[in-house]
Length: 245
Image 1 (cartoon, helix red, strand yellow):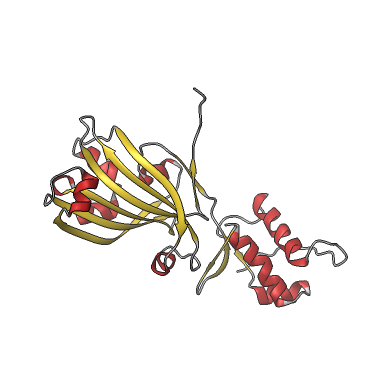
Image 2 (tube, rainbow, N blue to C red; image 1 turned 135 degrees about the vertical axis):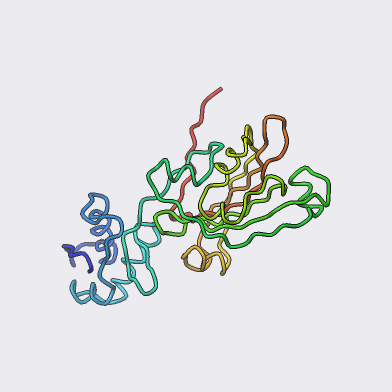
């Protein structure tokens, strides 16, 4: 059921009505009146209750969606979003970080391909061309909500099984084999989502995405895995600490 929420609007204020409505809902989210997952009434009901136009109500909700405070789900409605996931830029896995933060990670395996390394893959993995490698693509969810699309490549002898990847994080599976990452080269960026990526991540077309490309090495300097991950910018933050030297 939509959460009952008192929203006062001042028609004599210079602040636009849509922004007044958005601010009132935002305050209720920030003070805990509206908990994550709470349902809100739709724009038609909101407009009728407040005596404003439907475009005004729509703009108020869109502003909160754009700021990552609300999410709209087809067939479900408008809900208060879960807080953004803050992840330190450390040599850890997303699965491990979600569990440590009290979130429930889930994985949907989208693709699993065993092949011989092409020239470009061989260069990334620092192995001879033609080496047996496995590339897999996963959709990672947090508390049932899509969060990231992850593509990883490993040499075949280290690659976990398809079944294992559906239930366990990659780095945990590697540790179970006695394989430990000691250093990584990582690049963080941003771009717009393709149509298929937006659909998988439940984002609007051409939504902003964070990107992370990482090559991880063991203590002997051998490449363990290469990953290219994309994250919903509305749900995810890379958190860093800078130290003067």
